[in-house]
Image (cartoon, rainbow, N blue to C red):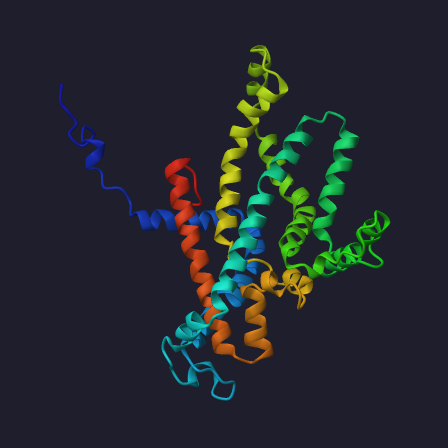
Length: 324
């Protein structure tokens, strides 16, 4: 019996095709098959390139003495002078502290409430009641920030507001909470929770919907109560989603929203309401100090990037899950 040497050659001796060609072929096949989906992705990608990545080149004005006449590239180079001015500014430590405290307060307060709401709605069996609660908690997310601030001001007005009239009814006099710097952060976080809790709960409800039904059946056979099912089945299923949301929240902890803080801001609560975004607006736009405004914005972005990398690394080490 003769041995066919050609057919007996080991599989390892066969030279595989180039990985680059294989990837290119797979990509071409995917584009031909799902060209409609790629066409839908084209507009968002172009939007990100034009409005997110291209403007990054203009961050160079943080290292220049920018003036509109010479333009971004024609303005004189000053190096790190703008950063030295920023760090020597006596207002700068208070800006960083106010921004970090307000953002951390918002993140810590907004993380558990959507989880609790999602767990509660997941246990509701009356579909009409469940949908009604979802609608009532989801709808405030679509209300404009200006409208929310107007509602807040009217509610807390010491003269015509509901809360102000309640204080007057019980003999507490006219209490203007918006004029008290100690209450600014509580008001900001309370309005944020009202608008975002229902919207964030939808993400956790989607995660709960993907839980294997056999886990609930096994827990029922073992005699687990509702609280035990939530503890041993629902919460472990929500942890990866909560971890990703926490990482993204920490990455944006220094990029807190400008609109609400600026609209709720007044001369009396300025000690706690003045944050980096509002200061950038006043310095860079109103005072036309574009270089210093870009310097503050660049510093803010770098801090956010460092926090994102650190929290993602810690999350991967502790929980085994992260963004990448």
